Image (cartoon, rainbow, N blue to C red):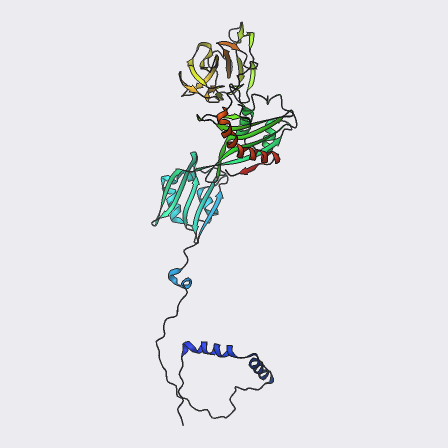
Amino acid sequence: MATTEVRILTQSIGRTLARALGAWSAGQWLAVAVLGMSGVAAFGIAPDATQETVPVHAILRELPNPVVDALDAPEAAAPAERYWREERVRRGDTIGSVLARLGVDDPEAALFLRTDPAARPLFQLRPGKALRVETDGAGRLETLRFVAGKGALLSIERRDGGFAAASSPAPVEVRWEMASGVIASSLFAAADASGLPDAVTLQLADVFGADIDFYHDLRRGDRFAVVYEMRYLDGEPLGAGRIVAAEFAHRGDVARAFLWRDATGVESYYTAEGAALRKAFLRSPMELSRVTSGFSGARFHPILQTWRAHKGVDYAAPVGTPIRATASGKVLFAGVQNGYGNTVHIQHRGAFSTLYAHLSRIAPDVKPGARVVQGDVIGSVGQTGWATGPHLHYEFRVDNEPRDPLTVALPNGEPLSPASRSAFVAGVEPAAAQLALARSYAGSPLAYAR
């Protein structure tokens, strides 16, 4: 009897079978299915049949290693996953409770935060501040970022098996934001309804204050639109900046203002035609202050108990309220002057000068001979000299003769020169477009990345 040798090639048998089965026609597959349903065991062995013994020889053959896809190789495993999360500080929070909400589970990081002096700002958290962390899949801290006080960005990173902390000035991003509103009762009520920050509302009153009395002249239905700067630090709002463009519709007239820096670097507001919007002098040395005593040829002096001329205007305000220079000029005097107490006297262009008395303090850089720019803070309201209460005594002089600051005709500001007007028109065009957009969305705060 012939010897039959069976060779088993384990690597190729699966592929051979797959090729054989794959080569069957549809008819062959149908025949197998019919036989299976008819109960015929075509591949069975009859009972009591003698089976021939087949000798088996094991053949060992060295096979090449299969090619493994690079994505399946252990050395090509994907790096550990990392996640950035952000959480805002709530009232009563500690750094531990904030990190717990952020999913940080890292005793080593907790020890570093407790012991490293650079991490101390994290234990002086204020509600509303944001804390951002990067963690791995197991909750270990990789990076922490927190904007601390005075615009410092605190960064803590895992390095060489430990942690390192660094503090650096965070880059400030300036965006243009817009708001508009309609006056129903007061400027501040309309500004609050539109989401306009108080600091910008005060600027708005200052920009148009030479032509509009925001205490007495406002009418229901007056409207405003503003484009202003908003400063952000690491994504967190840091505060409002300057007004870039604004308009105010009052009694049927529309006044527009655009911020422009001239060739000398001085910034001021101009109309769309390049005319100076601000007068050479501010009407008031304080923002939205209250007049308690006006200019008079005869007023009963509360301390001297005699009738005397009152050669200025008194503005009542709390001690410490900032006082502004009403025009640019040179400081003639800064110090104590008899009944005026702490006094600042400024000479402006031409024959004009202004005097500020009863100050609680004089700004450190306001000294005789120093230059000041309109709007610079020169001191604070006080009660020095002959004063019965905290207030500012303000005088406006022409050729050193006192004039009523509330009624005197203020000189106009210098307009743009013809040579710089074309640059101005082109430069304010983006702001004018945003102002038109703000006007069309009255009462809705908008943002525009600049």
